Length: 210
Image 1 (tube, one colour):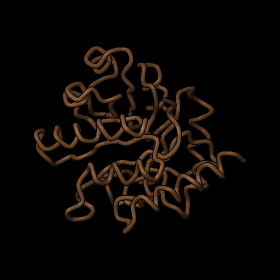
Image 2 (cartoon, helix red, strand yellow):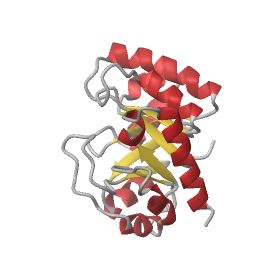
Image 3 (cartoon, rainbow, N blue to C red):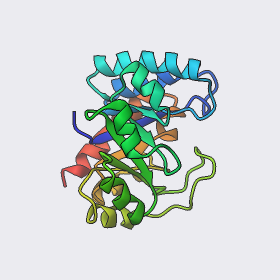
Image 4 (cartoon, helix red, strand yellow):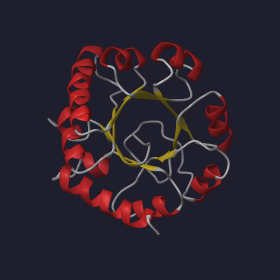
């Protein structure tokens, strides 16, 4: 499974009553290649049971399953990997816990952080915020599209661009060389999550061919 394409991050807080596994299944039906389970506030118990459901869904649809931050739950449900931030466990510790086959993504907002992540053994970089976003508290000021090209010319591992990506601007992310486009609210708040994901996939594929 390649680290490329549409990467949907689940968020139950954006639409009341919409569960992580429901978001994941709609995104997978729409053609998403990667699903990340992210929830900064729920209990480990809730997170674990949602992770179990999404693990089965991603197997069914031959997609990659990434857990945000909670390395112990990634190990418990046999997720494909984790995405961690600058203040989380180091790549070395995560690798020791999850093994050599685990996918490790590190969130970065500068070229220096990206170089450090690659040097320490990350498999990909979650790079952003590319555009303004309100789905994550304490988010940095947007860094812009040109930084995608700059970091791509600096590191060899794949780049997953994140923040504020939607149907109106995803083509720009593709054109600037990102390997993946991380999408949260554009999918999660859509009335038809499957249809929106499919549209994002089609736009992405059309512009990655150029």
